[in-house]
Image (cartoon, rainbow, N blue to C red; front, side):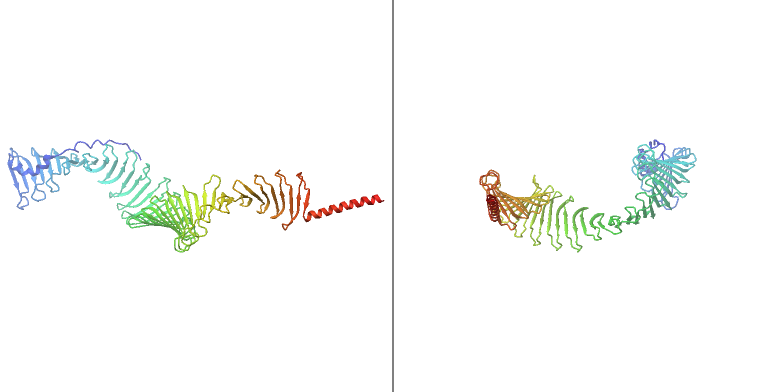
Length: 619
Protein backbone atom coordinates (compact mmCIF):
# COMPACT_ATOMS: atom_id res chain seq x y z
CA UNK A 1 0.00 0.00 0.00
CA UNK A 2 1.47 3.32 -1.07
CA UNK A 3 0.89 6.77 0.34
CA UNK A 4 2.10 10.29 -0.33
CA UNK A 5 5.22 11.30 1.57
CA UNK A 6 4.96 14.39 3.68
CA UNK A 7 7.61 16.65 5.08
CA UNK A 8 7.22 17.18 8.80
CA UNK A 9 7.49 20.97 9.20
CA UNK A 10 5.56 21.34 12.43
CA UNK A 11 8.37 20.16 14.63
CA UNK A 12 10.30 23.42 14.97
CA UNK A 13 9.85 26.44 17.22
CA UNK A 14 9.51 25.29 20.81
CA UNK A 15 11.83 22.32 20.85
CA UNK A 16 14.89 24.19 22.12
CA UNK A 17 13.14 26.84 24.17
CA UNK A 18 14.50 26.98 27.74
CA UNK A 19 12.84 28.66 30.70
CA UNK A 20 15.59 29.46 33.22
CA UNK A 21 13.55 32.24 34.82
CA UNK A 22 10.61 29.89 35.28
CA UNK A 23 12.81 27.16 36.77
CA UNK A 24 14.03 29.38 39.59
CA UNK A 25 10.77 31.29 39.98
CA UNK A 26 9.43 29.06 42.67
CA UNK A 27 12.61 29.33 44.75
CA UNK A 28 12.38 33.14 44.95
CA UNK A 29 8.59 33.47 45.01
CA UNK A 30 8.30 34.45 48.65
CA UNK A 31 10.97 37.09 48.26
CA UNK A 32 9.18 38.48 45.22
CA UNK A 33 5.91 38.67 47.11
CA UNK A 34 7.44 40.53 50.04
CA UNK A 35 9.26 42.97 47.79
CA UNK A 36 6.30 43.78 45.55
CA UNK A 37 5.21 47.37 45.14
CA UNK A 38 1.54 46.52 45.90
CA UNK A 39 0.02 44.67 48.74
CA UNK A 40 -0.14 40.90 49.21
CA UNK A 41 -2.69 38.74 50.88
CA UNK A 42 -1.84 35.40 52.48
CA UNK A 43 -4.41 32.84 53.40
CA UNK A 44 -4.67 29.41 55.00
CA UNK A 45 -7.67 28.02 53.18
CA UNK A 46 -7.75 24.60 54.86
CA UNK A 47 -6.92 25.84 58.37
CA UNK A 48 -3.88 23.56 58.72
CA UNK A 49 -1.76 26.38 60.10
CA UNK A 50 0.16 26.85 56.87
CA UNK A 51 -0.22 29.48 54.23
CA UNK A 52 -1.48 27.86 51.02
CA UNK A 53 -2.46 30.92 48.99
CA UNK A 54 -0.70 34.21 48.39
CA UNK A 55 -2.22 36.93 46.22
CA UNK A 56 -0.09 39.83 45.05
CA UNK A 57 -1.70 43.05 43.80
CA UNK A 58 -0.21 45.87 41.74
CA UNK A 59 -0.10 49.54 42.66
CA UNK A 60 -3.66 49.89 41.37
CA UNK A 61 -4.70 47.12 43.74
CA UNK A 62 -5.40 44.77 40.88
CA UNK A 63 -4.44 41.12 41.11
CA UNK A 64 -1.01 40.56 39.52
CA UNK A 65 0.08 37.16 40.76
CA UNK A 66 -1.36 34.28 42.66
CA UNK A 67 0.66 31.49 44.31
CA UNK A 68 -1.09 28.30 45.38
CA UNK A 69 -0.14 25.19 47.37
CA UNK A 70 -2.49 22.76 45.59
CA UNK A 71 -1.32 19.60 47.36
CA UNK A 72 -1.00 21.18 50.84
CA UNK A 73 2.62 20.11 51.29
CA UNK A 74 3.68 23.53 52.54
CA UNK A 75 5.22 24.55 49.24
CA UNK A 76 3.73 26.67 46.53
CA UNK A 77 3.38 24.64 43.32
CA UNK A 78 1.12 26.77 41.10
CA UNK A 79 1.70 30.34 40.01
CA UNK A 80 -0.79 32.42 38.05
CA UNK A 81 0.11 35.69 36.35
CA UNK A 82 -2.42 38.38 35.44
CA UNK A 83 -2.67 41.38 33.24
CA UNK A 84 -5.54 43.77 33.66
CA UNK A 85 -6.92 41.24 36.13
CA UNK A 86 -7.00 38.56 33.44
CA UNK A 87 -4.84 35.47 33.71
CA UNK A 88 -2.16 35.33 31.01
CA UNK A 89 0.09 32.50 32.27
CA UNK A 90 -0.10 29.64 34.73
CA UNK A 91 2.98 27.71 35.88
CA UNK A 92 2.79 24.42 37.73
CA UNK A 93 5.12 22.09 39.59
CA UNK A 94 3.17 18.88 39.00
CA UNK A 95 5.51 16.40 40.72
CA UNK A 96 6.52 18.44 43.83
CA UNK A 97 10.19 18.46 42.88
CA UNK A 98 10.49 22.24 43.18
CA UNK A 99 10.68 22.68 39.41
CA UNK A 100 8.12 24.08 37.02
CA UNK A 101 7.11 21.43 34.41
CA UNK A 102 3.92 22.93 32.89
CA UNK A 103 3.19 26.42 31.61
CA UNK A 104 -0.20 27.48 30.25
CA UNK A 105 -0.60 30.61 28.13
CA UNK A 106 -3.93 32.49 27.96
CA UNK A 107 -5.39 35.15 25.71
CA UNK A 108 -8.65 36.90 26.50
CA UNK A 109 -9.07 34.58 29.44
CA UNK A 110 -8.89 31.50 27.21
CA UNK A 111 -6.03 29.05 27.29
CA UNK A 112 -4.25 28.96 23.94
CA UNK A 113 -1.12 26.92 24.54
CA UNK A 114 0.49 24.63 27.10
CA UNK A 115 4.18 23.83 27.28
CA UNK A 116 5.72 20.95 29.19
CA UNK A 117 9.44 20.78 29.97
CA UNK A 118 11.87 18.06 30.98
CA UNK A 119 14.36 18.15 33.86
CA UNK A 120 16.71 20.39 31.93
CA UNK A 121 13.96 22.91 31.25
CA UNK A 122 13.69 22.01 27.56
CA UNK A 123 10.18 22.05 26.11
CA UNK A 124 9.21 18.50 25.10
CA UNK A 125 5.46 18.91 24.54
CA UNK A 126 3.28 21.77 23.27
CA UNK A 127 -0.53 21.67 23.24
CA UNK A 128 -2.62 24.14 21.27
CA UNK A 129 -6.26 24.86 22.18
CA UNK A 130 -9.21 26.17 20.18
CA UNK A 131 -11.42 29.10 21.16
CA UNK A 132 -13.43 26.84 23.43
CA UNK A 133 -10.31 25.73 25.29
CA UNK A 134 -10.33 22.29 23.74
CA UNK A 135 -7.06 20.68 22.51
CA UNK A 136 -6.56 21.26 18.82
CA UNK A 137 -3.01 20.02 18.22
CA UNK A 138 -0.14 18.56 20.25
CA UNK A 139 3.51 18.60 19.24
CA UNK A 140 5.68 16.15 21.18
CA UNK A 141 9.42 15.51 21.45
CA UNK A 142 9.38 11.86 22.56
CA UNK A 143 13.17 11.42 22.48
CA UNK A 144 14.25 14.64 24.21
CA UNK A 145 16.37 15.58 21.21
CA UNK A 146 14.76 19.01 20.75
CA UNK A 147 12.89 17.77 17.69
CA UNK A 148 9.09 17.47 17.73
CA UNK A 149 8.71 14.04 16.15
CA UNK A 150 5.03 13.39 16.91
CA UNK A 151 1.97 15.51 16.06
CA UNK A 152 -1.55 14.88 17.40
CA UNK A 153 -4.63 16.52 15.83
CA UNK A 154 -8.06 16.94 17.35
CA UNK A 155 -11.59 17.72 16.16
CA UNK A 156 -14.04 19.27 18.65
CA UNK A 157 -11.61 18.36 21.41
CA UNK A 158 -11.38 14.69 20.47
CA UNK A 159 -8.24 13.04 19.17
CA UNK A 160 -8.59 12.45 15.44
CA UNK A 161 -5.15 11.48 14.11
CA UNK A 162 -1.44 11.51 14.76
CA UNK A 163 1.77 11.38 12.72
CA UNK A 164 5.33 10.63 13.67
CA UNK A 165 8.80 11.09 12.23
CA UNK A 166 10.60 8.31 14.12
CA UNK A 167 14.09 8.95 12.75
CA UNK A 168 13.67 12.74 12.89
CA UNK A 169 14.72 13.33 9.29
CA UNK A 170 11.74 15.50 8.44
CA UNK A 171 9.74 12.71 6.70
CA UNK A 172 6.63 11.24 8.32
CA UNK A 173 6.82 7.46 8.60
CA UNK A 174 3.91 6.65 10.96
CA UNK A 175 0.21 7.54 10.72
CA UNK A 176 -2.53 6.78 13.22
CA UNK A 177 -6.25 7.50 13.19
CA UNK A 178 -8.58 7.65 16.20
CA UNK A 179 -12.27 7.32 16.90
CA UNK A 180 -13.75 8.45 20.19
CA UNK A 181 -10.22 9.18 21.45
CA UNK A 182 -9.38 5.53 20.85
CA UNK A 183 -7.05 4.26 18.13
CA UNK A 184 -8.75 3.11 14.95
CA UNK A 185 -5.86 2.23 12.62
CA UNK A 186 -2.10 2.67 12.45
CA UNK A 187 0.19 2.55 9.42
CA UNK A 188 3.98 2.42 9.48
CA UNK A 189 6.56 2.98 6.73
CA UNK A 190 9.88 2.56 8.53
CA UNK A 191 12.12 2.67 5.46
CA UNK A 192 10.22 5.60 3.94
CA UNK A 193 9.84 3.93 0.54
CA UNK A 194 6.16 4.80 0.30
CA UNK A 195 5.03 1.24 1.12
CA UNK A 196 3.59 0.32 4.51
CA UNK A 197 5.44 -2.38 6.46
CA UNK A 198 2.82 -2.56 9.19
CA UNK A 199 -0.92 -1.80 9.39
CA UNK A 200 -2.84 -2.25 12.66
CA UNK A 201 -6.62 -2.12 13.04
CA UNK A 202 -8.27 -1.60 16.44
CA UNK A 203 -11.67 -2.57 17.83
CA UNK A 204 -14.20 -0.24 19.44
CA UNK A 205 -12.37 -0.50 22.73
CA UNK A 206 -9.16 0.74 21.15
CA UNK A 207 -7.51 -2.66 21.39
CA UNK A 208 -5.64 -4.17 18.44
CA UNK A 209 -7.89 -6.52 16.50
CA UNK A 210 -5.95 -7.32 13.36
CA UNK A 211 -2.58 -6.32 11.92
CA UNK A 212 -0.71 -6.90 8.66
CA UNK A 213 3.10 -6.97 8.50
CA UNK A 214 5.89 -7.07 5.95
CA UNK A 215 8.43 -9.03 8.02
CA UNK A 216 10.47 -10.12 5.01
CA UNK A 217 11.08 -6.57 3.78
CA UNK A 218 9.97 -7.31 0.22
CA UNK A 219 7.22 -4.71 0.19
CA UNK A 220 4.39 -7.24 0.64
CA UNK A 221 2.30 -7.76 3.78
CA UNK A 222 2.70 -11.52 4.12
CA UNK A 223 1.97 -11.76 7.87
CA UNK A 224 -1.45 -11.37 9.50
CA UNK A 225 -2.01 -11.19 13.24
CA UNK A 226 -5.31 -11.55 15.05
CA UNK A 227 -5.95 -10.40 18.62
CA UNK A 228 -8.28 -11.20 21.48
CA UNK A 229 -8.76 -8.71 24.34
CA UNK A 230 -5.86 -6.73 22.94
CA UNK A 231 -3.43 -9.68 22.97
CA UNK A 232 -2.20 -11.55 19.95
CA UNK A 233 -4.02 -14.89 19.57
CA UNK A 234 -3.06 -16.15 16.10
CA UNK A 235 -0.44 -15.25 13.53
CA UNK A 236 -0.69 -16.42 9.92
CA UNK A 237 1.81 -16.11 7.08
CA UNK A 238 1.57 -16.49 3.32
CA UNK A 239 5.26 -16.36 2.42
CA UNK A 240 4.84 -17.22 -1.27
CA UNK A 241 1.78 -14.96 -1.78
CA UNK A 242 -0.29 -17.71 -3.37
CA UNK A 243 -3.33 -16.97 -1.22
CA UNK A 244 -2.73 -20.01 1.00
CA UNK A 245 -1.51 -19.72 4.57
CA UNK A 246 1.76 -21.62 5.02
CA UNK A 247 2.46 -20.81 8.67
CA UNK A 248 0.09 -20.61 11.63
CA UNK A 249 1.19 -19.71 15.17
CA UNK A 250 -1.17 -19.82 18.13
CA UNK A 251 -0.61 -17.62 21.19
CA UNK A 252 -1.76 -17.60 24.78
CA UNK A 253 -0.99 -14.66 27.04
CA UNK A 254 0.91 -13.10 24.11
CA UNK A 255 3.26 -16.10 24.13
CA UNK A 256 3.42 -18.66 21.30
CA UNK A 257 2.15 -22.11 22.29
CA UNK A 258 1.84 -23.96 18.99
CA UNK A 259 2.96 -23.53 15.40
CA UNK A 260 2.52 -25.40 12.14
CA UNK A 261 4.39 -24.58 8.98
CA UNK A 262 4.30 -25.57 5.31
CA UNK A 263 8.03 -25.39 4.55
CA UNK A 264 7.78 -26.17 0.82
CA UNK A 265 4.47 -24.36 0.26
CA UNK A 266 2.74 -27.40 -1.22
CA UNK A 267 -0.43 -26.85 0.77
CA UNK A 268 0.43 -29.37 3.51
CA UNK A 269 1.92 -28.51 6.89
CA UNK A 270 5.18 -30.37 7.50
CA UNK A 271 6.77 -28.63 10.52
CA UNK A 272 5.04 -28.66 13.92
CA UNK A 273 6.42 -26.83 16.98
CA UNK A 274 5.25 -26.68 20.57
CA UNK A 275 6.18 -23.82 22.91
CA UNK A 276 6.29 -23.24 26.65
CA UNK A 277 6.77 -19.81 28.24
CA UNK A 278 7.37 -18.41 24.77
CA UNK A 279 10.25 -20.80 23.92
CA UNK A 280 10.12 -23.92 21.74
CA UNK A 281 10.18 -27.25 23.59
CA UNK A 282 9.52 -29.77 20.79
CA UNK A 283 9.46 -29.78 17.00
CA UNK A 284 8.83 -32.45 14.42
CA UNK A 285 9.44 -32.07 10.71
CA UNK A 286 8.68 -33.96 7.51
CA UNK A 287 11.83 -33.13 5.57
CA UNK A 288 11.03 -35.09 2.41
CA UNK A 289 7.34 -34.10 2.40
CA UNK A 290 5.99 -37.65 2.28
CA UNK A 291 3.48 -37.03 5.05
CA UNK A 292 5.62 -38.66 7.77
CA UNK A 293 7.74 -36.77 10.29
CA UNK A 294 11.43 -37.73 10.15
CA UNK A 295 13.18 -35.07 12.26
CA UNK A 296 12.36 -34.63 15.95
CA UNK A 297 13.92 -31.75 17.90
CA UNK A 298 13.79 -31.09 21.63
CA UNK A 299 14.78 -27.79 23.22
CA UNK A 300 16.01 -26.79 26.68
CA UNK A 301 14.35 -24.25 28.99
CA UNK A 302 16.07 -21.39 27.17
CA UNK A 303 14.69 -22.47 23.82
CA UNK A 304 18.04 -23.77 22.59
CA UNK A 305 18.34 -27.06 20.74
CA UNK A 306 18.95 -29.95 23.15
CA UNK A 307 18.47 -33.08 21.04
CA UNK A 308 17.69 -33.88 17.41
CA UNK A 309 16.60 -37.35 16.24
CA UNK A 310 16.54 -37.97 12.50
CA UNK A 311 15.41 -40.63 10.06
CA UNK A 312 17.73 -39.55 7.25
CA UNK A 313 16.92 -42.56 5.05
CA UNK A 314 13.15 -42.15 5.54
CA UNK A 315 12.71 -45.79 6.53
CA UNK A 316 10.81 -45.12 9.75
CA UNK A 317 13.90 -45.74 11.92
CA UNK A 318 16.03 -43.14 13.68
CA UNK A 319 19.55 -43.33 12.25
CA UNK A 320 21.09 -40.14 13.62
CA UNK A 321 20.84 -38.49 17.04
CA UNK A 322 22.53 -35.18 17.86
CA UNK A 323 22.97 -33.83 21.39
CA UNK A 324 23.52 -30.18 22.33
CA UNK A 325 24.46 -28.12 25.38
CA UNK A 326 23.74 -24.38 25.45
CA UNK A 327 22.85 -24.64 21.78
CA UNK A 328 26.24 -26.10 20.84
CA UNK A 329 26.64 -29.67 19.49
CA UNK A 330 28.46 -31.99 21.91
CA UNK A 331 27.76 -35.47 20.55
CA UNK A 332 26.24 -37.20 17.52
CA UNK A 333 25.39 -40.88 17.12
CA UNK A 334 24.64 -42.18 13.63
CA UNK A 335 23.92 -45.39 11.73
CA UNK A 336 26.14 -45.03 8.67
CA UNK A 337 25.35 -48.43 7.10
CA UNK A 338 21.59 -48.49 7.75
CA UNK A 339 21.55 -51.71 9.81
CA UNK A 340 19.68 -50.09 12.71
CA UNK A 341 22.72 -49.82 15.00
CA UNK A 342 24.21 -46.39 15.76
CA UNK A 343 27.83 -47.44 15.35
CA UNK A 344 29.36 -44.00 14.74
CA UNK A 345 29.63 -41.46 17.57
CA UNK A 346 31.05 -37.97 16.99
CA UNK A 347 32.16 -35.69 19.83
CA UNK A 348 32.33 -31.88 19.61
CA UNK A 349 34.15 -29.15 21.54
CA UNK A 350 33.12 -25.52 21.10
CA UNK A 351 30.91 -26.59 18.21
CA UNK A 352 33.73 -28.34 16.32
CA UNK A 353 34.42 -32.04 15.75
CA UNK A 354 37.29 -33.26 17.97
CA UNK A 355 36.78 -37.04 18.11
CA UNK A 356 34.79 -39.75 16.34
CA UNK A 357 34.40 -43.45 17.19
CA UNK A 358 32.98 -46.44 15.29
CA UNK A 359 31.75 -49.76 16.67
CA UNK A 360 31.57 -51.93 13.57
CA UNK A 361 31.00 -55.27 15.35
CA UNK A 362 28.35 -53.77 17.68
CA UNK A 363 29.98 -55.03 20.87
CA UNK A 364 29.68 -51.68 22.64
CA UNK A 365 33.41 -50.97 22.27
CA UNK A 366 34.83 -48.52 19.70
CA UNK A 367 36.80 -50.26 16.94
CA UNK A 368 37.96 -47.03 15.32
CA UNK A 369 38.73 -43.66 16.93
CA UNK A 370 39.42 -40.55 14.85
CA UNK A 371 40.99 -37.45 16.41
CA UNK A 372 40.57 -33.97 14.87
CA UNK A 373 42.45 -30.69 15.36
CA UNK A 374 40.96 -27.25 16.02
CA UNK A 375 40.32 -26.81 12.26
CA UNK A 376 38.32 -30.08 12.20
CA UNK A 377 41.07 -31.79 10.21
CA UNK A 378 42.04 -35.36 10.97
CA UNK A 379 45.12 -35.73 13.18
CA UNK A 380 45.11 -39.40 14.09
CA UNK A 381 43.04 -42.55 13.51
CA UNK A 382 43.27 -45.62 15.74
CA UNK A 383 41.62 -48.87 14.59
CA UNK A 384 41.04 -52.35 16.00
CA UNK A 385 40.64 -54.23 12.73
CA UNK A 386 40.49 -57.73 14.26
CA UNK A 387 38.07 -56.68 17.05
CA UNK A 388 40.23 -58.08 19.85
CA UNK A 389 39.87 -54.96 21.97
CA UNK A 390 43.31 -53.50 21.17
CA UNK A 391 44.23 -50.96 18.49
CA UNK A 392 46.33 -52.46 15.70
CA UNK A 393 46.29 -49.72 13.06
CA UNK A 394 47.31 -46.07 13.46
CA UNK A 395 47.01 -43.33 10.84
CA UNK A 396 48.68 -39.92 11.27
CA UNK A 397 47.73 -36.78 9.35
CA UNK A 398 49.35 -33.42 8.60
CA UNK A 399 47.19 -30.53 7.38
CA UNK A 400 44.33 -32.96 6.97
CA UNK A 401 46.26 -35.35 4.68
CA UNK A 402 47.53 -38.81 5.57
CA UNK A 403 51.29 -38.73 6.26
CA UNK A 404 51.98 -42.05 8.01
CA UNK A 405 50.29 -45.36 8.70
CA UNK A 406 51.36 -48.03 11.19
CA UNK A 407 49.93 -51.53 11.66
CA UNK A 408 50.35 -54.48 13.98
CA UNK A 409 49.34 -57.21 11.54
CA UNK A 410 50.56 -60.07 13.70
CA UNK A 411 48.58 -58.86 16.77
CA UNK A 412 51.63 -59.18 19.03
CA UNK A 413 51.53 -55.60 20.26
CA UNK A 414 54.37 -54.43 17.99
CA UNK A 415 54.14 -52.39 14.80
CA UNK A 416 55.19 -54.54 11.84
CA UNK A 417 54.11 -52.28 8.97
CA UNK A 418 54.68 -48.61 8.32
CA UNK A 419 53.49 -46.61 5.31
CA UNK A 420 54.65 -43.07 4.48
CA UNK A 421 52.73 -40.51 2.39
CA UNK A 422 53.46 -37.21 0.65
CA UNK A 423 50.61 -34.84 -0.24
CA UNK A 424 48.22 -37.68 0.47
CA UNK A 425 49.95 -40.11 -1.93
CA UNK A 426 51.62 -43.29 -0.65
CA UNK A 427 55.38 -43.17 -1.22
CA UNK A 428 56.90 -45.98 0.85
CA UNK A 429 55.84 -49.01 2.89
CA UNK A 430 58.13 -51.05 5.14
CA UNK A 431 57.09 -54.37 6.64
CA UNK A 432 58.36 -56.87 9.19
CA UNK A 433 56.90 -60.03 7.71
CA UNK A 434 58.55 -62.55 10.07
CA UNK A 435 58.06 -60.62 13.31
CA UNK A 436 61.75 -60.40 14.20
CA UNK A 437 61.67 -56.62 14.61
CA UNK A 438 63.47 -56.00 11.29
CA UNK A 439 61.49 -54.45 8.46
CA UNK A 440 62.80 -56.62 5.62
CA UNK A 441 60.18 -55.64 3.01
CA UNK A 442 60.17 -52.17 1.45
CA UNK A 443 57.62 -50.98 -1.10
CA UNK A 444 58.27 -47.76 -3.01
CA UNK A 445 55.68 -45.84 -5.01
CA UNK A 446 55.72 -43.02 -7.52
CA UNK A 447 58.41 -44.48 -9.80
CA UNK A 448 58.38 -43.08 -13.32
CA UNK A 449 57.92 -46.53 -14.92
CA UNK A 450 56.47 -48.65 -12.13
CA UNK A 451 53.47 -48.05 -9.90
CA UNK A 452 55.26 -49.93 -7.13
CA UNK A 453 58.70 -51.49 -6.55
CA UNK A 454 59.07 -53.92 -3.66
CA UNK A 455 62.41 -54.91 -2.10
CA UNK A 456 63.15 -57.77 0.29
CA UNK A 457 66.19 -57.69 2.61
CA UNK A 458 65.87 -60.73 4.89
CA UNK A 459 69.40 -60.65 6.30
CA UNK A 460 69.26 -56.95 7.25
CA UNK A 461 72.50 -56.14 5.38
CA UNK A 462 70.87 -53.15 3.67
CA UNK A 463 71.22 -54.98 0.33
CA UNK A 464 67.93 -56.36 -1.07
CA UNK A 465 67.98 -59.99 -2.17
CA UNK A 466 64.93 -59.52 -4.39
CA UNK A 467 62.99 -56.74 -6.09
CA UNK A 468 59.44 -56.89 -7.48
CA UNK A 469 58.17 -54.40 -10.07
CA UNK A 470 54.43 -53.66 -10.42
CA UNK A 471 52.21 -51.73 -12.83
CA UNK A 472 48.69 -50.88 -11.66
CA UNK A 473 49.06 -53.45 -8.92
CA UNK A 474 50.15 -56.30 -11.24
CA UNK A 475 53.59 -57.92 -10.91
CA UNK A 476 55.45 -57.43 -14.18
CA UNK A 477 59.10 -58.08 -13.25
CA UNK A 478 61.14 -59.67 -10.50
CA UNK A 479 64.89 -59.62 -9.87
CA UNK A 480 66.94 -61.58 -7.33
CA UNK A 481 70.43 -61.61 -5.84
CA UNK A 482 70.66 -65.19 -4.58
CA UNK A 483 74.30 -65.11 -3.49
CA UNK A 484 74.10 -61.73 -1.68
CA UNK A 485 76.96 -60.24 -3.70
CA UNK A 486 74.98 -57.10 -4.52
CA UNK A 487 74.59 -58.16 -8.16
CA UNK A 488 71.38 -59.35 -9.81
CA UNK A 489 71.39 -63.08 -10.56
CA UNK A 490 68.12 -63.45 -12.44
CA UNK A 491 65.13 -61.45 -13.72
CA UNK A 492 61.60 -62.68 -14.36
CA UNK A 493 58.98 -61.08 -16.63
CA UNK A 494 55.19 -61.35 -16.20
CA UNK A 495 52.19 -60.43 -18.37
CA UNK A 496 49.06 -58.44 -17.46
CA UNK A 497 47.59 -61.57 -15.84
CA UNK A 498 50.71 -61.82 -13.64
CA UNK A 499 51.81 -65.00 -15.43
CA UNK A 500 55.50 -65.74 -15.97
CA UNK A 501 56.49 -65.24 -19.62
CA UNK A 502 60.27 -64.91 -19.54
CA UNK A 503 63.23 -65.35 -17.19
CA UNK A 504 66.87 -64.34 -17.49
CA UNK A 505 69.74 -65.86 -15.52
CA UNK A 506 72.87 -63.73 -15.38
CA UNK A 507 76.46 -64.75 -15.22
CA UNK A 508 79.02 -62.14 -14.15
CA UNK A 509 76.61 -59.17 -13.96
CA UNK A 510 73.24 -57.69 -14.95
CA UNK A 511 74.60 -56.81 -18.39
CA UNK A 512 75.72 -60.40 -19.01
CA UNK A 513 72.61 -62.60 -19.52
CA UNK A 514 73.64 -66.23 -19.34
CA UNK A 515 70.38 -68.12 -19.80
CA UNK A 516 67.01 -66.89 -21.09
CA UNK A 517 63.78 -68.87 -20.51
CA UNK A 518 60.44 -68.49 -22.33
CA UNK A 519 57.11 -69.78 -20.93
CA UNK A 520 53.61 -70.58 -22.20
CA UNK A 521 50.25 -69.49 -20.72
CA UNK A 522 50.53 -72.30 -18.14
CA UNK A 523 53.88 -70.90 -17.02
CA UNK A 524 55.66 -74.00 -18.37
CA UNK A 525 59.02 -73.53 -20.08
CA UNK A 526 58.76 -73.93 -23.85
CA UNK A 527 62.17 -72.65 -24.87
CA UNK A 528 65.48 -71.49 -23.41
CA UNK A 529 68.67 -70.10 -24.86
CA UNK A 530 72.14 -69.87 -23.36
CA UNK A 531 75.29 -67.88 -24.11
CA UNK A 532 78.06 -70.28 -23.18
CA UNK A 533 81.03 -68.31 -24.48
CA UNK A 534 79.88 -64.96 -23.14
CA UNK A 535 79.94 -63.13 -26.48
CA UNK A 536 76.41 -61.81 -26.03
CA UNK A 537 74.88 -64.22 -28.53
CA UNK A 538 72.91 -67.37 -27.81
CA UNK A 539 74.72 -70.56 -28.77
CA UNK A 540 72.59 -73.23 -27.08
CA UNK A 541 68.83 -73.62 -27.50
CA UNK A 542 66.56 -75.80 -25.35
CA UNK A 543 63.05 -76.83 -26.40
CA UNK A 544 60.38 -78.22 -24.04
CA UNK A 545 57.04 -79.95 -24.36
CA UNK A 546 54.68 -80.08 -21.35
CA UNK A 547 57.53 -78.80 -19.23
CA UNK A 548 59.97 -81.58 -20.26
CA UNK A 549 63.14 -81.19 -22.33
CA UNK A 550 62.66 -82.64 -25.83
CA UNK A 551 65.40 -81.09 -27.92
CA UNK A 552 68.67 -79.19 -27.52
CA UNK A 553 70.55 -77.33 -30.26
CA UNK A 554 74.10 -76.02 -29.98
CA UNK A 555 76.26 -73.70 -32.08
CA UNK A 556 79.88 -74.73 -31.57
CA UNK A 557 81.48 -72.46 -34.20
CA UNK A 558 79.61 -69.25 -33.26
CA UNK A 559 78.12 -68.76 -36.71
CA UNK A 560 74.63 -68.38 -35.29
CA UNK A 561 73.39 -71.74 -36.64
CA UNK A 562 73.19 -74.99 -34.67
CA UNK A 563 75.63 -77.78 -35.54
CA UNK A 564 74.72 -80.19 -32.77
CA UNK A 565 71.23 -81.58 -32.22
CA UNK A 566 70.10 -83.63 -29.23
CA UNK A 567 66.74 -85.37 -28.92
CA UNK A 568 65.17 -86.56 -25.61
CA UNK A 569 62.29 -88.82 -24.84
CA UNK A 570 59.33 -88.08 -22.57
CA UNK A 571 61.32 -89.11 -19.51
CA UNK A 572 64.05 -86.62 -20.35
CA UNK A 573 66.58 -89.25 -21.47
CA UNK A 574 68.87 -88.52 -24.41
CA UNK A 575 67.97 -90.74 -27.27
CA UNK A 576 69.74 -89.12 -30.19
CA UNK A 577 72.68 -86.82 -30.83
CA UNK A 578 73.53 -85.43 -34.28
CA UNK A 579 76.50 -83.39 -35.46
CA UNK A 580 77.20 -81.20 -38.46
CA UNK A 581 80.89 -81.78 -38.95
CA UNK A 582 81.31 -79.60 -42.01
CA UNK A 583 78.97 -76.84 -40.74
CA UNK A 584 76.73 -76.94 -43.79
CA UNK A 585 73.59 -76.95 -41.67
CA UNK A 586 72.88 -80.69 -42.13
CA UNK A 587 73.72 -83.51 -39.65
CA UNK A 588 76.66 -85.68 -40.68
CA UNK A 589 76.95 -88.00 -37.70
CA UNK A 590 74.26 -89.43 -35.40
CA UNK A 591 74.76 -91.15 -32.03
CA UNK A 592 72.51 -92.92 -29.55
CA UNK A 593 69.88 -95.70 -29.65
CA UNK A 594 67.74 -93.96 -32.19
CA UNK A 595 70.78 -93.21 -34.30
CA UNK A 596 71.92 -96.90 -34.12
CA UNK A 597 68.48 -98.07 -35.16
CA UNK A 598 68.42 -95.70 -38.06
CA UNK A 599 71.94 -96.88 -39.11
CA UNK A 600 70.81 -100.58 -38.98
CA UNK A 601 67.81 -99.85 -41.16
CA UNK A 602 70.04 -98.06 -43.65
CA UNK A 603 72.43 -101.02 -43.71
CA UNK A 604 69.58 -103.47 -44.27
CA UNK A 605 68.28 -101.36 -47.06
CA UNK A 606 71.72 -101.19 -48.58
CA UNK A 607 72.14 -105.02 -48.22
CA UNK A 608 68.78 -105.62 -49.80
CA UNK A 609 69.72 -103.36 -52.61
CA UNK A 610 73.04 -105.09 -53.09
CA UNK A 611 71.40 -108.58 -52.87
CA UNK A 612 68.88 -107.69 -55.46
CA UNK A 613 71.58 -106.51 -57.84
CA UNK A 614 73.54 -109.77 -57.55
CA UNK A 615 70.48 -111.90 -58.24
CA UNK A 616 69.80 -110.00 -61.40
CA UNK A 617 73.36 -110.52 -62.51
CA UNK A 618 73.13 -114.31 -61.90
CA UNK A 619 70.02 -114.52 -63.98
